[in-house]
Length: 491
Ligand SMILES: C[S@@+](CC[C@H](N)C(=O)[O-])C[C@H]1O[C@@H](n2cnc3c(N)ncnc32)[C@H](O)[C@@H]1O
Image (cartoon, protein in one colour):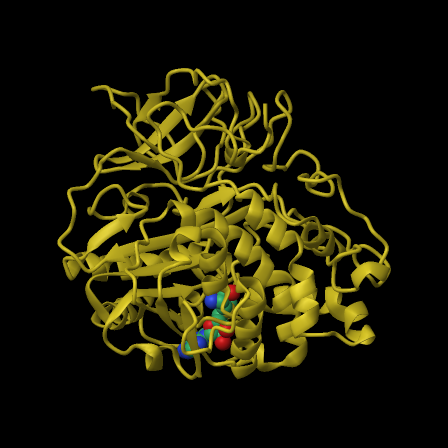
């Protein structure tokens, strides 16, 4: 049985949100350093320094800061190199697992805008993970404050796709524009994407976050054609979720269709609940390129899991909601029930789905669940507890991190100013939510053979398809072995 949760099938009747990385996507990401080296050759000094620069960038982005990163931070050549070798590829991994499961049926001749595109991360991921769209003629505009990030992104896309995206006859014709995100908002868009940007717009502005996000949502919506879509993706942090909440509220008020991930249009059940949990979807880093895993560990930023939050809305009459229950957390243990549990979002409110067989559904799964009248209430969250029937496949979705038997659920202590602090990760990678705890960076300069140092560096690669080494003991939610379940906190 595969230990890669992504490969494990969903329970009967359940729909999986996060797809496994397709083999050709894995192969292309494994070979991605060749592209990076081609478009941005690094001088040897910077190759040696890169793990440190990545670490500093991560620290500056995840520090308990007020006001977000300084404007134009990606224009600093060192910072941009660090982004390209760490954040960009992790975001490609994350997005390439999300996008195949989304309804993104952009028409032939369709217009796409990527706002705050950085090095065209979203467009690269769309090309990688949605081969069904490659033959469509798309007109794409990418806008960002950093001109250099746009130029490098354009070059990377050209290498990836094998054609010049600026050529008038290119199937995907891409125009890049340096500027503020709203300058990319001309009418007639079939898809507007904003990926790992909203939390930066939350920045220094005094305006309350919800109002700010409602304003951004209105701007995005205005630029859509009827039937057009807006996709906002954030790192799976509390701040990212708070940003999405404000936008969701605005889209509901504009009578737009909320396509995913919410199975209903009511107020977010995690807002109404007594828990501090927030809506986000985690996945193990299994399947990530080996060079990236090795390089991240070398930078002291090895990952236990990847995480994201997102919202897909459509400028269309709200479709009848499919109903069902969306799994909106990783697995946690309950003090008084064997096995593990996850939070579920439904029109009826928050649910605690208990899997006594320790095979909880995976984050993002959409399930049909009957809530029995008089279901016992979970003392912590106040939500009804529903016992799931045993999973007949017997496969344990490692991405939900089955919680250890008998482990008592621990609420994470809210820090003061929690919203800003727990959600300060940028770029969708390296957030506290994702990091594998404190790791000492590996000594020595060059990372693995295919990392920034190229073939001359000492290789520390793991066997194909596996992370280079297990995450820190007892806290892994990666592809754990059956019988050695990993712990997970309950928020
Ligand atoms: C964390 S990066 C995300 C880049 C890319 N979307 C990705 O997911 O990898 C945030 C990007 O948003 C850009 N950005 C932030 N505020 C912006 C604004 N007001 N207008 C345009 N771009 C902005 C930054 O320059 C940066 O490239």
